[in-house]
Structure formats: C-alpha cells, structure tokens
Image (cartoon, rainbow, N blue to C red; front, top):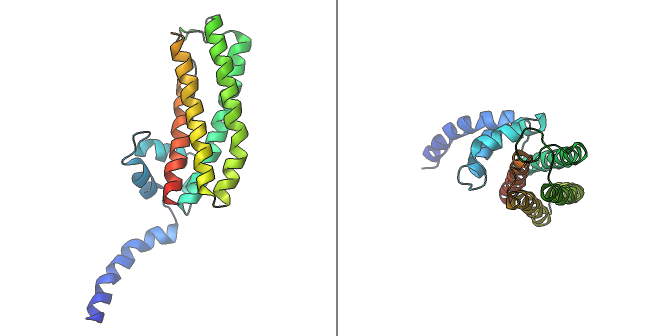
Length: 186
C-alpha cells in the first residue's frame, strides 16, 4: 500500500518541480487572484507584475505584493506630477485636446493631487508592513489608497468634465486591490 502511494506521488513531484526550480509563480498567482476578482483580471495582474524584474522573479505572494506596492508608489508619484503639470499648464480641461481647465475641474484636480499625495505618503509604511509580515496593516493602507483613487475619479466625473487622469486612477485602484488580493494568499 505504501509503495503504491509513493508511486502515485512521484509524477506529481515532477510536475511541480519546474515551478519550484524556476521560482516563477507569476502566472499561477495571477490566475489565483485575478481569476475571480471583480476589480482586475488575470491579464492586468500579469502585465503589471511582469513589467518589472522583481515581479517575474518573485518567489511568493508576499514578494508579489511588495511589487504591487512599489508599482502603486510609482503610479501615485507620476499621477501627482501629471496633475501638477495639468494645473500649471491649464490643460486637460474636459475635451482631451489640452484646453484650459475650468474652475470646477481645477478644484477637482487639486483634490486629486492631495489624494495622491496621501497615497504616496502611505506607501513607505505599506511597504514596511508587507516586508514585516503585518499583512492586515498593509491591506488597510492599500484599501485607503484604492478609495482615494476612486474618490479622485468620482470627483472629476461629478464635475461633468472628462477626467484627464482616468487611466491613472484606474491603474492605482487596480494596483491597490491587486496588493490586497495577493496579501490574502501570503
């Protein structure tokens, strides 16, 4: 009985061996967290985490979550700078043609810049929480970041103007939710 049990397990070891040897868990992890998510799909997970070497080389869900946090940090910094440029140049006001920003859109963009500054300020603590295994703290910070990105977009939409940062808000929201989902498996 024991020898037949060992014989049945042997093929499973060979199937699992390539994943263990290469350490590439990106595709299976993205399938796990993105397959049933209402916030992002498998392709977003693969594109985002695979866009940097650390994502492709990750060995655990914790490592992948750290990559998502790093990408969210980069997104928040870039989006805040983009909003600053829009406000300085007066562009991005509703038509996508670089027209002047009306007063209501400018106020919304100023709120968005503050929201993104908050995201960026939370990121060092979030990264430290992920590295330190304090996943509850990290998830809470990521949920706040997702809510901030959503609030920015909602505020711009309520002003009846086309948001010049829709793609940035969407990416920030999805990266935050991706980080939460990965930490749920860490």
